[in-house]
Image 1 (tube, rainbow, N blue to C red):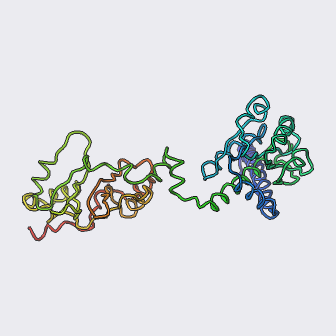
Image 2 (spheres, helix red, strand yellow):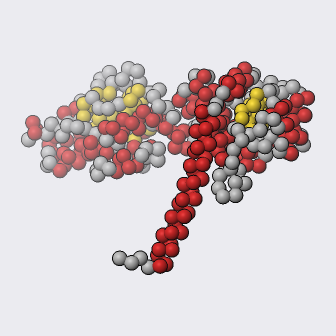
Image 3 (cartoon, rainbow, N blue to C red):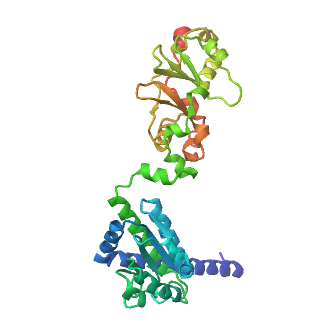
Length: 361
């Protein structure tokens, strides 16, 4: 079959675009692999310099290198190493006052001869501030003035013109990531520490403790296991948004079961209304899935997903309920696909037993 000339031209054009893009990615990937193979003792020296510093890591750089420097400073800070970014041009116009004598300065410049960076160096040297350079030219003015040099080597930028900072900034970024994560590991940085620095957004909520996001007991429906289903439903009705489950406790206040809206639906569907006047312990889910306070929300989400449930009681060390995690409260931080693939509301599977109705029928 003959392909129309216009369509063939479009196919060729798209193929050329993809080829160019793939070439850029391969060039940068190759440079990163080469950098990994040639990493040497200077990296270890850089790590030790930062670890021994009693102040902060001050990162600076101009242009695209400066933008990478901002990201490196942010990554260092979020993984346990105190860090700030200072613009080199602003630094020589007063922002040097932000740098403490206990700080170290990380300077990024591919050429090592960037005008604003070179003008900044004498001031740093005069204050005897330790300088960590990230550059492609060890013999440059920056390389000569630095105490430790992380060299990205002599490289070509990606693309046809080989001019725009691409491969060089990719290597700086990756090297900064390597520094940050090695320092984080050496410092014993844990998920709990990460959570303290990331309280906002989906990630922060995943790393929050369950008690920070659960519905407190005062907002939950709670009853003793001796009460009848009808009594529970009538007396525990509350205005506004309500939980889709009733937490059931024994005389000692310990969680013994859970009764969900889905359980009630099954009673009605099976026309077993007479059980409504029996003890709720006869139709509740015994020994339900639960989570102890002090656990991370990410663990709670794992349970919700794995067990295909929509309500997860939170208990204290004695097994007494203190709140409830409801899937509607955490749906933004859960993987929607993991719930939707089940094809029905997760709450319908809170109980793996289909209520012991037959013994009442």
